[in-house]
Image (cartoon, rainbow, N blue to C red):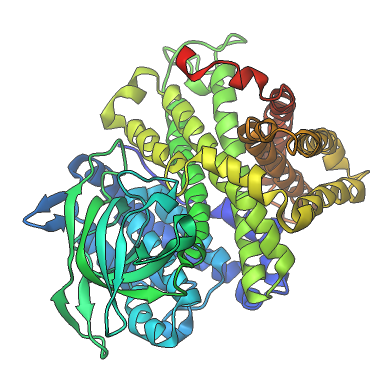
Length: 592
């Protein structure tokens, strides 16, 4: 059986030594001292280790079932969900006006990693609810907020997002779900949605669906889409639950992974819905939810890599196999442990350097979200908007890759279900697909985000990297393997951006054919920047009395590994981008 321990020590390093959270000028951050964040993360770790992780394999094995129109979750899920609710874990960063605790999103992110790593499928029930809460909080009327949010904050009622239809995935302008206006101001929603995570279950008394649909007579395409609140159970003006709405589950999808989450086909048969936000502006409201979800999915990517790495490391230390070519390290035993072998070390270092860099990247992104929302900082909002497709696309691609690599450490045992590695691989795979497949993330990055606000935000990122390198010239730790690789990688990123500017206007395929490589190139530079910053922070901590030398020196060594072994991939991605679209588009469709 696999195990999980929350990496609270590393999280604390990122929060306080790297990001220096408690000294930031963001409202609420002054309360985030080491003792407070440590206490929250430790408690979340106990919940994850003792309650949620033991149910991970149960959920994978049992899955969800549909019985007479009712979705049943796996054994133990309902009691665990009650514990999560009772502990206030669903309300961490929610608005106190509706029963939330009002903590920064950064704190929610740290806890979210722990819960997602321990049991990804389970954590999605509250994760989707949080996204729906955010959409109503931003776009709802005061009456809608008062009616729906308090019970969603506590997860007494959970939430979903309903976009995809059988004939229309990414191209939402093709949707057929219709909304017919009624005399009382409500709408009758009719249509079918598929792939709806947490679409129905037995852990909450009501489910609040956010559904995209087209109002009768709406403009064609995406400009005619509106967003509606469509509850499973009708709720009166006093908040009392009444009759069942015209919403039903057609079936539960049989999936590769995340079996513990009920992914449903949802049928809407004249269901009562309430317009959220403006008519025909549904995508604006839905993107509030989707952007948050994309950051959460990026987190899922590296969280699955984290738990897979923990177990691969334990196996490599315990498993005896072969002898160290430089001399026996376990002379009294029949063989040496796997971890003595260079190729196993390479594999583990790839995983470790990715996970720790990804954690820093996502936590930094969460702090930008707090700065954007709590300080109304438009520059922070623009930068995190630019980086969102990188967080989602790059981290989930690499998270899956390194979950597979962790499985590889086990050899044949990794392919056997009882060891648990297969589940991490299968669960991680969906993160590359949902909330906008990663190819779409790359197109969004190159096609929209680079040019946003006249390219202001990508130029600000370039300047951030350039300034860091200049300001830290002469830093003994950084001069030894950090600054030069970061400079080279940043130049590759700038060269790729210049290529798009020079060729993309004449031939859009010149940019689009290189978009996926650009997303990965950008991701490597972001992790390179994170590692350089972490190395600087670790070097400064080493100079203090009582420093944890083993931890800090390992941090620097791991960062140096990333800069030497992973960051040079930027040159490969640039070379691919600069080959242009001709080789990609050379074949006629009939020649494939």
